[in-house]
Amino acid sequence: MEFALALAPQVLVDGLVLGFMYALIALGYTMVYGVLQFINFAHSEIFVLGAFVGVEILLGLQGAGVLAGIPVWVLLPVLVAAGMAASGFLAVGVERVAYRPLRGAPRLVPLLSAIGISFFLQDAIRFLESIWRNAFYLTYPSLEGLDRRIQLGPALDISVKSLVVIGSSILMLVGLTFLVNKTKMGRAIRAVAQDPETASLMGVDVNRVISLTFLIGGAMGGAAGVLFGIQYSLISPYTGFIPGIKAFTAAVLGGIGNIPGAMVGGLVLGLLESFSASYLSLLTGGAFGAEYKDIFAFSILILILILRPKGLLGEVVGEKA
Image 1 (tube, rainbow, N blue to C red):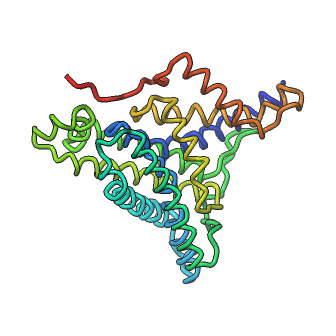
Image 2 (image 1 turned 180 degrees about the vertical axis):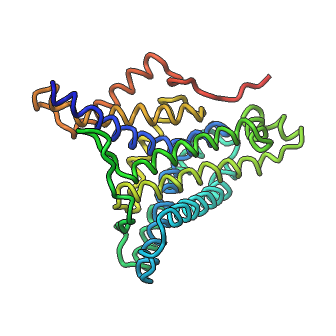
Image 3 (image 1 turned 135 degrees about the horizontal axis):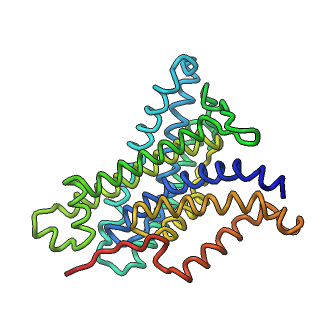
């Protein structure tokens, strides 16, 4: 018991880092669903593109011999901005090519299109990286200063890059909440989410707003991709599948379409995973280990959704008056 209590602060910190990562990815799902009531299952690959853009920039700078000379506080915002731009514009392109022509079709049709685009993007990234580098499993170069660990107590320390993930996630949540609730652009997004036909009659360019929503959601995914690569190092075209599924789960858990809900759902899921990975073996006498963490976390999720089907903070959908 003393060992379990001593381990708890570190497990909590690790769960928060993982949860904020899920939350950042989940923001992309919840933005698109809030406007179109549609799940963009290609968001996992949009997230992965951001990770590849970040690693290509770093490898290019490393190959030129200048990586070590760039301060990390200059380099990191550039990486995140590049990942956001690439993933955001890819999301807009995907919406224009694969989703817009199917708008108004039965919901199953764009869902199948999203799955098809997901497989297409996986293979496209693998193909391009195979031509460019003859490899598509890439490792982020270590950035000086980010791997340094800060001792917070006798049994608790945290790396600088983990603090960067947490801080970036909070800033993006606050910024996105402000954008949606306090700006003219946000009012247009909320109007289209509530009733696109009436919004169009009131002068709102619905297609432009939907593209903007995909741009913002994709940019969040791209930022998450860069931060994921920095935090966990190894990436591949298939890296986005498991985090994407869990981020979608986090969005549903918090309340699909609800921006704060995506953050809450991500944190809950990350903490459940972290605590189950650390304590399952102790609680079951070794019968179950860390490999069962997903079963435990998703069992709790199912229980929560049985008791509260709309998620912890409630599902946000448009209500026509």
